[in-house]
Amino acid sequence: MTQRVRKAVFPAGGLGTRFLPATKVVPKEMLPLVDKPIIQYGVEECLASGIEHIIFITGRGKSAMEDHFDFSFELDANLERRGKKELLELSRRVATMARVSYVRQKEPLGLGHAVLCAKDLVGDEPFAVLLPDDVVDAPRPCIGQLIDVFNQRNGSVLATMTIEGPAISAYGVLAGSADAQNPRIYNCTGMVEKPKFEDAPSTQAIVGRYVLTPRVFELLETTKPGAGNEIQLTDGILALLAQEKVFGYTFEGKRYDAGDKFGMLQATVEFALKREEFSEKFRDYLKSLPL
Ligand code: G1P
Image 1 (cartoon, helix red, strand yellow):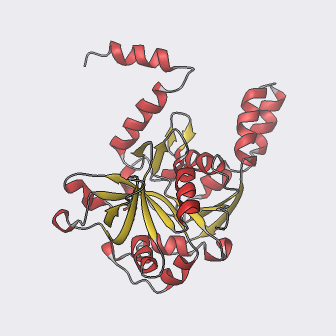
Image 2: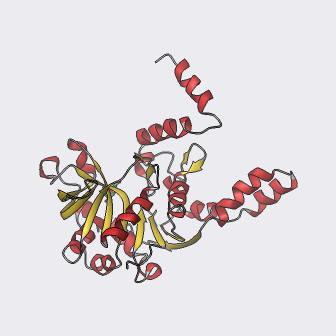
Image 3: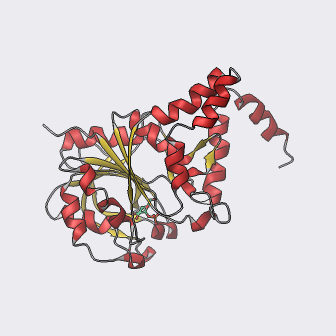
């Protein structure tokens, strides 16, 4: 029997330089996608997948995130006084939706180091990692899909997507082969963070969703800085692969890089088109543009 995945780690210490100037003061995780900060999509994905405890790894200037997942006394009192019941419910729901903990990453030493900061709060149990920039629209929550594979195969699982061409250099890339029984599963034999295009071992790029066994913490403790001179999560998982099975999983759904200006534009258009309350109006508006 595998242990249940109850906790999720959200590394959220990054500076968001790809989205300047919007992220000069506002944390990138708080940028709105239609009407919710992008981090809330990840949190809701976890809650819909049976995860109960959210662990944010934060850094300087990220306090807006803590305020978002807390009660806003002045706002709530004001809404109550004015009888705005639905808005009050919306505001309070965010504060009560999850059990949340915060760990401060004091130095930006890399994604692997950020995950290692959660070691004490996670303890000796399997856990999820979600990179908040990666927003995934899926028929069944992406992290829930990975948890299913983790339970079936009893090994760590990384979400993957196929990237053709030089763009692969922006990702962690897996080596290995597709599983004979389930072609969505990829049996890993290696992985490399941000390889040169000509050195990429496959077209299987890592997307920011992982289910990992706690053994990875010990390995991250001794992982040396790698690509970009940062302690890379990919390198910690590569060390894990020497001891345990690790799988890739081609999740069902679509991933948007909401930490990137163009990716956010794509997500905004597509998420807005799916929103019942204004999908028709928005569709008509788009059609009316002289494109
Ligand atoms: C991180 C990971 C990388 C992964 C990517 C997915 O890179 O290190 O392995 O492919 O997220 O978004 P970053 O985008 O933080 O440079």
